[in-house]
Length: 56
Image 1 (cartoon, rainbow, N blue to C red):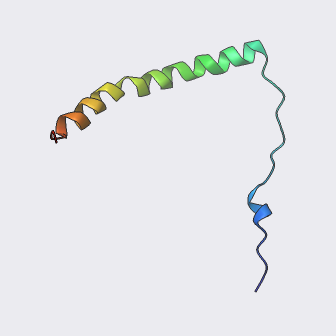
Image 2 (image 1 turned 30 degrees about the vertical axis):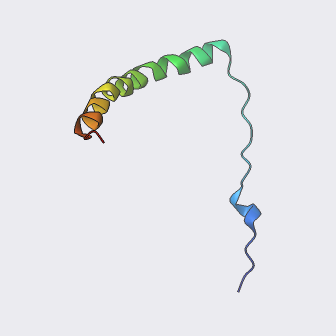
């Protein structure tokens, strides 16, 4: 049987250069709408979860 080397699970990816201010703003702007779409239903889900729980 072949020997298993644990190091092969950890591949090192090349590092990217840091973003410029303009690039960082573009990334941030692109994330705002998806984050808002996630934030909106969280309170509704919490009400559903806590509403179904019975007190101890």
